[in-house]
Length: 322
Ligand SMILES: [Mn+2]
Image (tube, rainbow, N blue to C red):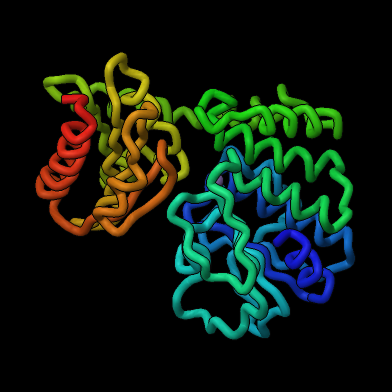
Protein backbone atom coordinates (compact mmCIF):
# COMPACT_ATOMS: atom_id res chain seq x y z
CA UNK A 1 0.00 0.00 0.00
CA UNK A 2 2.79 2.45 0.84
CA UNK A 3 4.47 1.59 -2.45
CA UNK A 4 1.27 2.27 -4.40
CA UNK A 5 0.76 5.52 -2.52
CA UNK A 6 4.32 6.62 -3.30
CA UNK A 7 3.81 5.90 -7.00
CA UNK A 8 0.58 7.93 -7.06
CA UNK A 9 2.21 10.81 -5.18
CA UNK A 10 5.19 10.86 -7.54
CA UNK A 11 2.86 11.15 -10.53
CA UNK A 12 0.83 14.06 -9.13
CA UNK A 13 1.90 17.67 -9.61
CA UNK A 14 -0.65 19.40 -7.40
CA UNK A 15 -1.54 17.76 -4.10
CA UNK A 16 -4.11 18.69 -1.49
CA UNK A 17 -3.21 17.58 2.04
CA UNK A 18 -5.99 17.63 4.59
CA UNK A 19 -7.17 16.17 7.90
CA UNK A 20 -10.21 16.06 10.17
CA UNK A 21 -12.28 19.04 11.30
CA UNK A 22 -11.53 20.38 14.78
CA UNK A 23 -7.95 19.20 14.26
CA UNK A 24 -5.85 17.77 17.07
CA UNK A 25 -2.07 17.46 17.33
CA UNK A 26 -1.95 14.30 15.21
CA UNK A 27 -4.01 15.90 12.44
CA UNK A 28 -2.02 19.14 12.31
CA UNK A 29 1.35 17.43 12.83
CA UNK A 30 0.68 14.80 10.15
CA UNK A 31 -0.64 17.42 7.71
CA UNK A 32 2.25 19.79 8.23
CA UNK A 33 4.85 17.02 7.97
CA UNK A 34 3.32 15.57 4.80
CA UNK A 35 2.95 19.01 3.19
CA UNK A 36 6.53 20.08 3.94
CA UNK A 37 7.87 16.75 2.71
CA UNK A 38 5.94 16.98 -0.58
CA UNK A 39 7.25 20.49 -1.10
CA UNK A 40 10.81 19.16 -0.94
CA UNK A 41 9.82 16.90 -3.85
CA UNK A 42 8.83 20.00 -5.86
CA UNK A 43 5.08 19.44 -5.60
CA UNK A 44 2.55 22.25 -5.49
CA UNK A 45 0.98 21.60 -2.09
CA UNK A 46 -2.19 22.98 -0.57
CA UNK A 47 -2.50 22.14 3.12
CA UNK A 48 -6.19 22.62 3.86
CA UNK A 49 -8.03 22.75 7.16
CA UNK A 50 -11.64 23.88 7.40
CA UNK A 51 -11.16 24.79 11.06
CA UNK A 52 -8.48 27.01 12.51
CA UNK A 53 -5.34 25.46 13.97
CA UNK A 54 -5.59 25.17 17.79
CA UNK A 55 -3.43 27.77 19.56
CA UNK A 56 -0.93 25.23 20.85
CA UNK A 57 -0.13 23.74 17.41
CA UNK A 58 0.25 27.02 15.51
CA UNK A 59 4.03 26.96 15.99
CA UNK A 60 4.17 24.14 13.42
CA UNK A 61 2.83 26.39 10.66
CA UNK A 62 3.79 29.93 11.64
CA UNK A 63 4.83 30.52 8.01
CA UNK A 64 1.18 30.38 6.89
CA UNK A 65 1.41 26.87 5.42
CA UNK A 66 -2.21 25.97 6.28
CA UNK A 67 -5.12 27.50 4.36
CA UNK A 68 -8.87 27.37 5.01
CA UNK A 69 -9.68 27.71 1.28
CA UNK A 70 -10.14 24.73 -1.00
CA UNK A 71 -8.62 25.13 -4.48
CA UNK A 72 -11.17 26.35 -7.03
CA UNK A 73 -9.38 24.49 -9.82
CA UNK A 74 -9.02 21.09 -8.21
CA UNK A 75 -5.87 18.98 -7.77
CA UNK A 76 -4.23 15.82 -9.13
CA UNK A 77 -4.31 14.03 -5.77
CA UNK A 78 -5.62 14.47 -2.24
CA UNK A 79 -4.08 12.97 0.87
CA UNK A 80 -6.56 12.70 3.74
CA UNK A 81 -4.96 12.17 7.13
CA UNK A 82 -6.37 11.00 10.47
CA UNK A 83 -10.01 11.20 9.28
CA UNK A 84 -12.31 8.18 9.57
CA UNK A 85 -14.40 9.40 6.64
CA UNK A 86 -14.08 11.96 3.85
CA UNK A 87 -16.90 14.09 5.26
CA UNK A 88 -14.76 14.68 8.36
CA UNK A 89 -12.11 16.46 6.28
CA UNK A 90 -13.76 18.00 3.21
CA UNK A 91 -17.06 19.92 3.33
CA UNK A 92 -19.81 18.02 1.51
CA UNK A 93 -20.44 20.86 -0.97
CA UNK A 94 -16.94 20.61 -2.53
CA UNK A 95 -17.10 18.57 -5.78
CA UNK A 96 -15.46 15.21 -5.17
CA UNK A 97 -14.02 15.04 -8.70
CA UNK A 98 -11.85 18.06 -7.90
CA UNK A 99 -9.98 16.01 -5.29
CA UNK A 100 -8.36 13.80 -7.94
CA UNK A 101 -6.80 10.56 -6.73
CA UNK A 102 -7.59 10.11 -3.03
CA UNK A 103 -5.10 8.57 -0.62
CA UNK A 104 -6.52 7.87 2.82
CA UNK A 105 -4.00 7.47 5.66
CA UNK A 106 -5.53 6.82 9.06
CA UNK A 107 -5.42 4.83 12.29
CA UNK A 108 -9.04 4.99 13.47
CA UNK A 109 -10.79 1.71 14.33
CA UNK A 110 -13.89 2.89 12.50
CA UNK A 111 -12.17 4.18 9.37
CA UNK A 112 -13.95 3.87 6.02
CA UNK A 113 -12.24 2.91 2.77
CA UNK A 114 -13.11 6.13 1.00
CA UNK A 115 -9.81 6.52 -0.88
CA UNK A 116 -8.48 4.97 -4.08
CA UNK A 117 -5.68 3.84 -1.76
CA UNK A 118 -6.44 3.23 1.91
CA UNK A 119 -3.66 2.87 4.42
CA UNK A 120 -5.46 2.15 7.67
CA UNK A 121 -3.58 0.79 10.65
CA UNK A 122 -5.42 0.96 14.00
CA UNK A 123 -2.24 -0.36 15.66
CA UNK A 124 -0.38 2.83 14.77
CA UNK A 125 -0.22 5.09 17.82
CA UNK A 126 -0.73 8.12 15.59
CA UNK A 127 -1.35 8.85 11.93
CA UNK A 128 2.03 10.57 12.12
CA UNK A 129 3.66 7.12 12.40
CA UNK A 130 2.10 6.15 9.06
CA UNK A 131 3.15 9.46 7.48
CA UNK A 132 6.78 8.61 8.25
CA UNK A 133 6.36 5.21 6.57
CA UNK A 134 5.00 6.98 3.49
CA UNK A 135 7.89 9.45 3.52
CA UNK A 136 10.40 6.61 3.86
CA UNK A 137 8.84 5.01 0.79
CA UNK A 138 9.10 8.34 -1.04
CA UNK A 139 12.72 8.71 0.05
CA UNK A 140 12.16 12.04 1.80
CA UNK A 141 14.63 12.50 4.69
CA UNK A 142 13.25 13.76 8.02
CA UNK A 143 14.59 17.27 8.56
CA UNK A 144 14.09 19.04 11.89
CA UNK A 145 10.86 20.75 10.80
CA UNK A 146 9.22 17.58 9.50
CA UNK A 147 10.42 15.58 12.51
CA UNK A 148 9.04 18.19 14.93
CA UNK A 149 5.60 17.99 13.30
CA UNK A 150 5.62 14.19 13.49
CA UNK A 151 6.85 14.24 17.07
CA UNK A 152 3.96 16.56 17.99
CA UNK A 153 1.51 14.16 16.31
CA UNK A 154 2.81 11.18 18.28
CA UNK A 155 3.29 13.04 21.57
CA UNK A 156 -0.31 14.26 21.60
CA UNK A 157 -2.02 11.08 20.34
CA UNK A 158 -0.25 9.00 22.99
CA UNK A 159 -1.01 11.48 25.78
CA UNK A 160 2.71 12.18 26.14
CA UNK A 161 3.53 8.47 25.77
CA UNK A 162 1.13 7.55 28.59
CA UNK A 163 -1.70 5.80 26.71
CA UNK A 164 -1.82 2.08 25.98
CA UNK A 165 -1.17 2.77 22.28
CA UNK A 166 2.44 3.56 23.22
CA UNK A 167 4.39 0.61 21.84
CA UNK A 168 8.04 -0.25 21.20
CA UNK A 169 7.77 1.15 17.66
CA UNK A 170 6.40 4.42 19.08
CA UNK A 171 9.50 4.87 21.21
CA UNK A 172 11.76 3.80 18.35
CA UNK A 173 10.14 6.48 16.21
CA UNK A 174 10.55 9.06 18.99
CA UNK A 175 14.22 8.14 19.16
CA UNK A 176 14.58 8.60 15.41
CA UNK A 177 12.81 11.98 15.59
CA UNK A 178 15.06 13.20 18.39
CA UNK A 179 18.07 12.14 16.35
CA UNK A 180 16.66 14.28 13.51
CA UNK A 181 16.85 17.34 15.74
CA UNK A 182 13.56 17.53 17.65
CA UNK A 183 13.73 19.33 20.99
CA UNK A 184 11.25 17.58 23.37
CA UNK A 185 11.47 20.52 25.76
CA UNK A 186 10.63 23.10 23.07
CA UNK A 187 7.67 21.04 21.78
CA UNK A 188 6.29 20.40 25.30
CA UNK A 189 6.47 24.09 26.07
CA UNK A 190 4.53 25.01 22.91
CA UNK A 191 1.97 22.23 23.24
CA UNK A 192 1.37 22.10 26.99
CA UNK A 193 2.72 25.26 28.56
CA UNK A 194 1.37 28.08 26.41
CA UNK A 195 -2.13 28.02 27.88
CA UNK A 196 -4.31 31.15 27.69
CA UNK A 197 -5.44 32.05 31.21
CA UNK A 198 -9.14 31.96 30.17
CA UNK A 199 -8.77 28.23 29.61
CA UNK A 200 -7.62 27.54 33.13
CA UNK A 201 -10.30 29.73 34.68
CA UNK A 202 -13.01 27.94 32.70
CA UNK A 203 -11.52 24.54 33.49
CA UNK A 204 -11.89 25.39 37.18
CA UNK A 205 -15.55 26.17 36.69
CA UNK A 206 -16.17 22.94 34.76
CA UNK A 207 -14.40 20.81 37.36
CA UNK A 208 -16.38 22.40 40.16
CA UNK A 209 -19.66 21.19 38.67
CA UNK A 210 -18.36 17.85 37.33
CA UNK A 211 -20.87 15.00 37.64
CA UNK A 212 -19.64 11.75 39.11
CA UNK A 213 -21.83 8.62 39.04
CA UNK A 214 -22.90 7.34 42.47
CA UNK A 215 -20.97 4.10 41.76
CA UNK A 216 -18.00 6.14 40.57
CA UNK A 217 -17.57 4.34 37.23
CA UNK A 218 -18.15 7.36 35.02
CA UNK A 219 -17.67 11.10 35.40
CA UNK A 220 -18.71 13.94 33.11
CA UNK A 221 -17.91 17.56 32.38
CA UNK A 222 -19.91 19.92 30.20
CA UNK A 223 -19.24 23.20 28.39
CA UNK A 224 -21.79 25.71 27.20
CA UNK A 225 -21.60 28.25 24.39
CA UNK A 226 -22.77 31.24 26.40
CA UNK A 227 -20.04 30.65 28.97
CA UNK A 228 -17.36 30.41 26.28
CA UNK A 229 -18.47 33.77 24.95
CA UNK A 230 -18.62 35.31 28.39
CA UNK A 231 -15.08 34.22 29.32
CA UNK A 232 -13.46 34.59 25.88
CA UNK A 233 -12.78 30.87 25.63
CA UNK A 234 -12.45 29.35 22.14
CA UNK A 235 -13.24 25.76 21.20
CA UNK A 236 -9.57 24.82 20.85
CA UNK A 237 -9.00 25.73 24.51
CA UNK A 238 -11.31 22.90 25.63
CA UNK A 239 -8.91 20.23 24.45
CA UNK A 240 -7.91 18.00 27.35
CA UNK A 241 -10.77 18.91 29.70
CA UNK A 242 -11.99 15.33 29.45
CA UNK A 243 -8.73 13.97 30.84
CA UNK A 244 -9.63 15.30 34.29
CA UNK A 245 -12.72 13.14 34.90
CA UNK A 246 -10.80 10.14 33.57
CA UNK A 247 -8.00 10.79 36.06
CA UNK A 248 -10.30 10.07 39.03
CA UNK A 249 -9.60 6.74 40.77
CA UNK A 250 -12.18 4.15 39.74
CA UNK A 251 -13.60 6.02 36.75
CA UNK A 252 -13.81 3.72 33.70
CA UNK A 253 -15.41 6.17 31.25
CA UNK A 254 -15.05 9.94 31.14
CA UNK A 255 -17.60 11.98 29.25
CA UNK A 256 -17.55 15.50 27.93
CA UNK A 257 -20.68 17.25 26.64
CA UNK A 258 -19.77 20.23 24.48
CA UNK A 259 -22.56 22.47 23.23
CA UNK A 260 -22.06 23.10 19.49
CA UNK A 261 -25.38 24.86 18.80
CA UNK A 262 -28.78 24.99 20.44
CA UNK A 263 -29.77 21.38 21.17
CA UNK A 264 -26.66 20.02 19.45
CA UNK A 265 -24.05 18.41 21.68
CA UNK A 266 -20.71 16.93 20.79
CA UNK A 267 -20.21 14.02 23.16
CA UNK A 268 -16.68 12.74 23.74
CA UNK A 269 -15.68 9.58 25.57
CA UNK A 270 -12.41 8.51 27.12
CA UNK A 271 -11.93 5.05 28.53
CA UNK A 272 -9.42 3.88 31.07
CA UNK A 273 -8.88 0.83 28.88
CA UNK A 274 -11.57 -1.71 29.83
CA UNK A 275 -14.46 -0.23 27.86
CA UNK A 276 -14.47 0.13 24.07
CA UNK A 277 -15.81 3.65 23.68
CA UNK A 278 -15.57 3.60 19.85
CA UNK A 279 -18.38 1.05 19.94
CA UNK A 280 -20.33 3.26 22.30
CA UNK A 281 -19.92 6.32 20.07
CA UNK A 282 -21.12 4.27 17.10
CA UNK A 283 -24.56 4.14 18.82
CA UNK A 284 -24.79 7.87 18.14
CA UNK A 285 -23.35 7.83 14.62
CA UNK A 286 -19.86 8.68 15.88
CA UNK A 287 -16.64 6.74 16.06
CA UNK A 288 -13.01 6.81 17.08
CA UNK A 289 -10.56 4.61 18.94
CA UNK A 290 -10.98 1.98 21.66
CA UNK A 291 -9.93 4.50 24.31
CA UNK A 292 -11.08 7.78 22.76
CA UNK A 293 -14.17 8.39 20.69
CA UNK A 294 -17.06 10.74 20.17
CA UNK A 295 -20.17 11.70 18.26
CA UNK A 296 -22.83 14.37 18.02
CA UNK A 297 -26.34 14.15 19.45
CA UNK A 298 -29.12 16.56 18.54
CA UNK A 299 -31.40 16.91 21.55
CA UNK A 300 -31.76 18.99 24.70
CA UNK A 301 -28.97 18.22 27.19
CA UNK A 302 -31.02 16.22 29.74
CA UNK A 303 -32.15 13.90 26.94
CA UNK A 304 -28.57 13.60 25.62
CA UNK A 305 -27.36 12.66 29.08
CA UNK A 306 -30.07 10.03 29.56
CA UNK A 307 -29.13 8.35 26.27
CA UNK A 308 -25.40 8.47 26.92
CA UNK A 309 -25.58 7.18 30.50
CA UNK A 310 -27.90 4.35 29.43
CA UNK A 311 -25.40 3.26 26.74
CA UNK A 312 -22.46 3.44 29.13
CA UNK A 313 -24.16 1.56 31.94
CA UNK A 314 -25.34 -1.12 29.52
CA UNK A 315 -21.73 -1.59 28.42
CA UNK A 316 -20.40 -1.55 32.00
CA UNK A 317 -22.95 -4.23 32.93
CA UNK A 318 -22.09 -6.33 29.87
CA UNK A 319 -18.45 -6.23 30.95
CA UNK A 320 -19.38 -7.20 34.51
CA UNK A 321 -18.01 -3.93 35.84
CA UNK A 322 -21.31 -3.02 37.53
MN1 LIG B 1 -4.90 10.47 15.39
